[in-house]
Length: 396
Image 1 (cartoon, helix red, strand yellow):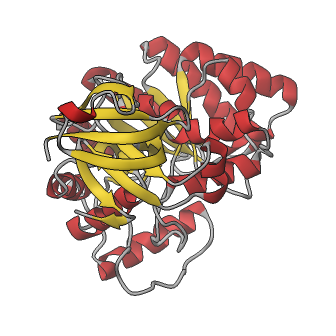
Image 2: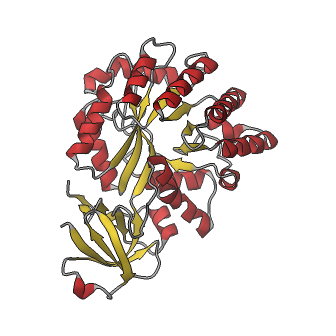
Image 3: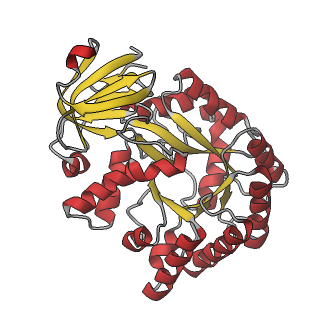
């Protein structure tokens, strides 16, 4: 079905409309009933609430054992311990693989995610094979999920000679971003790691997305280094901090100053809203134009058995972590999973609007806050103009 009418849906819980979709794009939106006779191919939306496809701004689709028998948690519960455990065990479970990446992307679609920024491990053991696997998985699904790749040095950068060359090659071969990992606590050389990453980013004209778990003053010190280099390199809008737990731990005055500097430098933030972390100063970040994106992080991988690919669960966790109650704040949490995520996958024209890629999710819900607190089944998902979920069941 290359052209059809999605009839009687309520964008963001508003008045019912008909959405015209042709060749993968929304071409028109009109009050329900005005175009019915002109569009014989129709899908009845039954007055359901419509949202644009969700954007997962921080994922690891290459790491999962989804679809395999249960894998028990093991290893030391530290960042370094998790890295070591994963490196020791991943071959046993065929990680990374095309099948594994495909399984995760299918779960994304089941839950309404049609675009993602995924960190893909690049290291001396797998080289760039993980990136090739993810690209093959995307192709196998016909591009239903649009994927931006971050070449991610999970095992460190400077401490593993040869990884910088792999990052450079990945950028040359189309990775949208290169990643970094705890420049201080993992590489123990924050200036060296960041200088090397920014050199590649400038030369290859790509972005940087840095995992930063370090807490307190150590984390804040690294934010300052990143801000300084982003300004010097003119990379505003192309640098992101993932996790960034320390930001919510700073004293109020220092935190406010840091947020303003992040906004002025054009640095964005992605979070998975873990329950044991300090709340982000999201109101200050919004005022300072620090873009925030939500992500699922790993899903049933060797780091953690948790995760099911449903970004709404993360949005609800964000809301609960930050004590959101009012309707407008609950709606903001859903916007983080949709509208505000668009910039993380370079979607300039995004949403339920003519000219945008036809990514539409229908839910049986009264309004957007109701969606957040219940996370109801995705009744219908349209991805790039193609129905990929119907009555909650995958069609791909």
